[in-house]
Length: 418
Image (tube, rainbow, N blue to C red; front, side):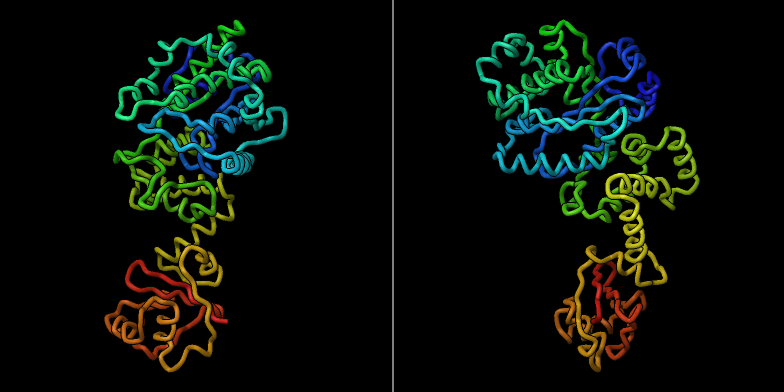
């Protein structure tokens, strides 16, 4: 179990920690209960959350007992860490829906059975009944405003243009209360988090020491950024979510296939369960043929499988072959692109004397019959990967049903014949 700390360090997942010797001793003394908090600010986790959730999974595989805390109470306030402005307050119904959705995702990423079974907890359960007077007496009296204002997350907001509200200023105390409560009721002795959580984590450690006279620990990892300086997990279309309804498994897979060479090793270490030695082997093979993007493909496969399962990864691969390669098309391959590209269903009888023109207009790939004829003449239309030479060319169907229409390099549309 003590080797886990060395593995985390080798992965670059150690940024800040309490007494290292004490942490090594704790992890080597037997199963430890630890926790990671996630505020339900949306109805899905995003790829940035994977660092923390997989950290819990690493501890679990080493025999420790993880608590995944979904912040039904702290989510009502919002963590000021890493933000320059106030978060929007969510209503109770939205928070409940977010908590439920995130909890379901966590059940797919952690093991909730066996001796090291993970547990889901919601801090609303132990915070709801606490009165303001009780909170001020039992928590507030153990923290000074000087200490709280000195924390980076608070100080940066106080020095900013918009300042910080008393509501968000109090967030640190609520998170400290969570750590204390979990220590008292679950014997939790370690809190994990990103480096922006250090102030909140140490506030909890201090509260445990003052109220219970016990020693607790904290461990943080570096915040994720990309080599080009852009925010990790963001695209031109927005956040990369773990929910398949928000971000398609194909889109998740493609996000990581397109990882910059300068990021891929770090992401393999942080976002997959591959052993460190295997990551080194993957990078060595990648260096010998970087144009094949082997490391990126491994990264995309591992993450997509973790989040959505092996079947979704295989579908994403097949769809990529259809859209970006030159495969021999089959019904299975074309079925894989359904939901990824637009599709139109039409009757076979609707394909008249100019079948390709009929298909292009019915699908909306071309705006009119004259636009279709002109585009065909220019050589910009392909059907099932084959360039069309004339409006009267046949539309050869795959498996008597599918035709992939393509205009230019990027515009694709799936035609299904009934």
